[in-house]
Length: 274
Image (tube, rainbow, N blue to C red):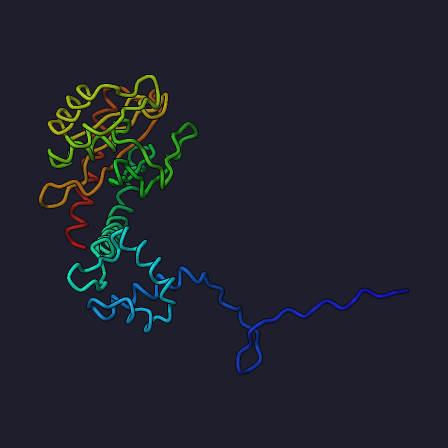
């Protein structure tokens, strides 16, 4: 009987003591981008194409393509007079936004959970992201019938309570620019389709301090949100609740609004201490 050929042994890296360790895999293009950004960040000055290539080991032809893409995205900028390269505003903005969102998440987490505990409804924290409201934190209702709120969901500003709040607290010029360019595509039969109607709602939201969405993003679901403000009155985020319309009456409206305002104020205070 013929026996099967022996299988080839797998190659593994080993330590000095002979114990196998996992081999780190990498994506060359990703490593090159990180090497490039780390070099410019560590030197803190503008550098020529040739110097970057020499110090990172990236071939000049590959480096040209990487620099072109990063300049286009704003992470690197090229100086007009010397044609040298340095970190761009996009890189600094990314770092600031990351740190800000980290602090915001830490400050909001206990109060978001407390909000759901006190109201029994699903809660969410959303921030402005490219003409959309992006949910970055959530808490789920313990009730059998609930609206499940997921992190990462992007909602049109005009169709969600959080989006309307973020839009209402934009500087007037930015808000008007949005209203001029946006296409009010309906998500449901109740989605706002008129910029004039939306303007009136935004004015009312600024006056009352709370935004509503009645089946405008999801049929049968009511959303309400309030701004989380910094000490200068700018909106850091929108804190909201979402629940089946069947659980909302006038008495609950007031209770939910008060709970939202209280939690938002606590998050503002926690951000101030951060």
